[in-house]
Length: 216
Image 1 (spheres, rainbow, N blue to C red):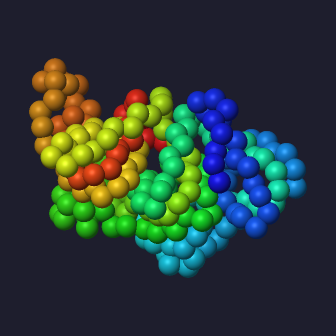
Image 2: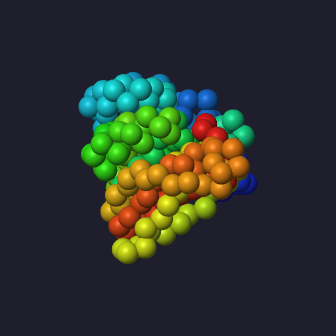
């Protein structure tokens, strides 16, 4: 279910009979047609295990099931919106950044410590991001939120990308991450704000970076 970008902070989705989508509660701005919005207590496409994973991750961002026939406009908090199209791969994203996504995508939860071992757990403690993160897998579209807009940086074998953990939004593909330490210029001038830690991503895929170090 593709999203049409109305502007940098609003998207429109077409809802057709027999297909559902999920959105963050409170994200509907307006709609046309016969569309219903119902609370989703199973954590999206993934059932009870997805819901349990979200509880363990302390990612209790409530979802709505959107069904019917019509068009729906989404936006939330004035945040910038980035539409990501998946073609069979997996998107890793913090749950509170999800604005809306296709119901065809399989939702799950991944323990970040499994990517980078102990350093993955350290990343969660240091950056304020959860030890768990939400995964969306399959073919479909995802609308995610960020501060100040998003840039997509490709990750290719042998050319890893280093990201300020506070600016990280999401990534997809066959990518591994680990936390590394570095001395940034802000630390040298007494304005340390996270550059002492960098998130290193390697493999094949892409990472989405926001133009801000502010969490949602």
